[in-house]
Image (cartoon, rainbow, N blue to C red):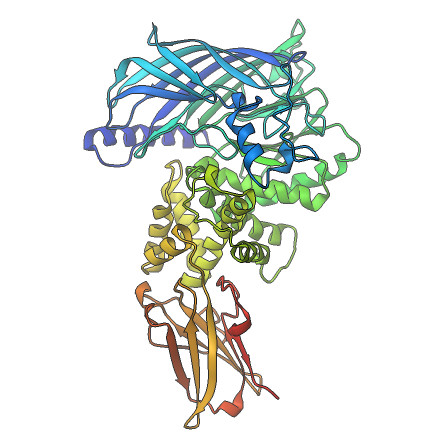
Length: 619
């Protein structure tokens, strides 16, 4: 796999050079971080130095850059605090029993902060201003297209009490969950800068190589992103089997990690972590770090072979995981994905522990290898992750559900019925309700794929997913990229699908209006009541128990899917034009032989009113 990274680096370099030369082809920025950090585990304050080499692969000259300072959100009066107090359904993890913001009550010693003490560009001091979670930097010299510059920084921080994702002293007793902890350069792409303030949601980052040294109390065990470079000095289960650890003098240890081609760096630490490893056959090494708590140890031991099964499932159904390790770490406040690792709460029932691991691990492919901008297209990450982890759980945990996506459809229907739905194009921070955000991102995002399988066929869907990953890994894909991939695989036109499902709140609603005799044959009449068009599968069940299907392709698809029920005879009908709300067809069987007619027996089409999707002969 080391050769893989050399190849990726070369490809990314060529992409950047081609972008500058052609001024219009694909390009993306690149960062290389070198950081040294000292953590005081008594007061949870830390100091650090950062050297950042920034490569401007864009066709634009840059006179300003931005850094994220995420920990500044955990202060009374911050934008995150104010949003928490103003939203009607605040995140329960961030509020107390009276729905009062936990951030608002943080004391000076409990808040989070991240401040830059000094910053230079190629040795020259630059002007910068801290605007809460964003550092605005006016450059000493513009960075030309294709140019590089080096920023050197000194910074200091304080780890907040665990409120959301990052923090100290979590409810389960984990000392340090260190995510979003360092000054992180914002992404600049074809849309410009993405210097979003940290208010509640997700992240976007620049790919690069990280070289990080962490110095802290030697009693603490550390896990997270990257590959440990000095395992024989560290021990704690990282040393090679059968070898002696070189004991280090003093009260601290320095952990040296390197992480190639990632857009984030997380670490967690606790003096009571148990550290287990498991080598996946033809895959990465899995690391498990969890509290030495007798009530959870058995579940965490049983989790380990299941995690290896999940890794194999995702490799097969999405594409090869490109890194050499993945770490499952107890910490945080629920479950959150990071580069090469996840933080999850660990005091769970076994099924829940596997479920959260499946979801967060699946994010590695969608958020940390494909890496869509989650703030703008959260449904592409959360939804696609929900889709594939639902399939994984159905197989790995032998759930044997006929429809593993049933829960996501129920969630979507509840959102539609609430009248609170907003389009999926809504920025993640701009949703009126957490309820609306969660279902739009997770449930409706998952249905984008499961329903796409209904449109183009299940085999074509899985082929689309694998091609999407292969074509767009390490490229920050946008919604059009998944649509175009599906079009290339299926041979259909799918602009209508992307438009209606993600850019509007149009709903799907088809019904059977009549089934009647027509000169000894049977005529079925259908109606489109919802604004969103779809192709329609119709199942006819006869009195003798035999079955037949009919398929009305949507005209604007300009194509047809293969028979999803090959064991049943299918008749392809004339295309159904969207502007024609009524549609009927006739088949050569008398009405008296017909027992039932069903629209979409798979129930993968998200029809909001299923009551008129079935016609049954009355006795």
